[in-house]
Length: 432
Image (tube, rainbow, N blue to C red; front, side):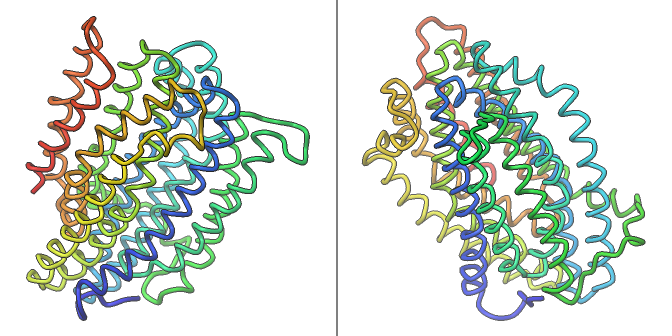
């Protein structure tokens, strides 16, 4: 366990961000490899898998209610030296996660196919989306207990072991991707379904190793089956802190769903270009995301300990470092944006969409970084409602106007991207 209430804030921030960033780097490496092999199946597969991947936002949104709630409560409990409370909330978060994972499987297999059918541009893309989703759903169910354990450890200042586990998970996923997607060594290509199945197998491995390591990498928290019996007062408190962030992620899902729905009239090439551009943007965001994620447990422990000056110092350090990173990435996306998409497709139409998307949306990178930093500080302090209120503006300033744009004969793809820049800039102002 790491005491984040003492020592230099910037040192804590950078050392934790390094391990978090490495973990995210390997995760993104998987996304890139996965996209590389899926892209060999054609534009319909890219569009379908990208559309089905939006269901990930539903699972991520639901898991945030647990992971952010336990992060805040465990970190604050550790900050005020109340280890019994920390163990209680860690145990009950895992209990909630197992229940949510089971619900995710049931709902996904019952209604997921109909949902991705509505998002895709044509029958071929819809078929690929369903195939990927049905292989991917077990990994989404396993996301809940995995996030609960990872967040509990992060609250205790433990990030290196989770980085190692996630790295191993990603390497398994990378190794399985060509075998299951294109049939390397087996002669039995499973296509988009294989991409989802590879993720599910790797997720099961990762959760098993994480559960084994959990009590061995820190002394404050344990996993005891008897302690997993639901205590709904603890569930309620975890949910109260986490539900605004959960709704915030759900709105992200709605925004991405709106984009796919709005641009589907531009064809599978437009959806494929946006899918590639979105994955690339996730990749370049990694350093700033790592800094923001590291800020939350630092703020939480210091808030619990009553060290409010250190909480403010955490925000200043994270905002400055994150903004510098995002400004650099903005320049990168303006140098040669289309080149960043060439490893995934040779289709000039898809490359044009990807390049334009990255070039325009990069103008809001600094704003997006500040939004992430503010959100992490709110999470650490245990009140995520301000972030939710700022995110709600995107439903007004982006989702509604984007739907209106889809009915205008003069509308172009770049108008959707410009609208996104405006909405995130306003969100940033309100978050600050």
